[in-house]
Image 1 (cartoon, rainbow, N blue to C red):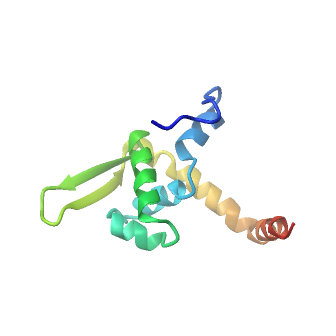
Image 2: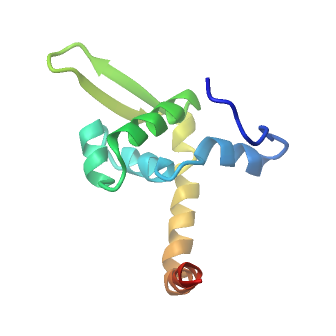
Length: 119
C-alpha cells in the first residue's frame, strides 16, 4: 500500500477539493466525460499526452470519490463506459468557471508560466 509522504489534511473545503481533484488529468477527464466521451479509448484520444496507466489510475480515483461510475458490459471484447454521477455533475459548473477564468486571463497566465520556466 502507498504510504503518504505528507500527512492527509482535510481541515477545510479547499483541502477536500485538492484531495479529490488533485491529479494532472482529473479535471479534463470530468469535463470530457460530461461532454459525452465515455469510453477509455475516447478519453485517451482527447488526452494524448497522458499514458493509459495514469488515466486508468485517475479514473479509478474519480470513481472512488463517487464523481464517476464505471459500467462494464459483458461483451467480447469487453466494453467499458464512464459517466458522471449526480454528485460529479455538481462540479462541472466549477470546472466551467475555472476554464472561463483561464480563457479570460490566457495571455497573462501564459506569460507568467513561460517566465517561470525560463528561470
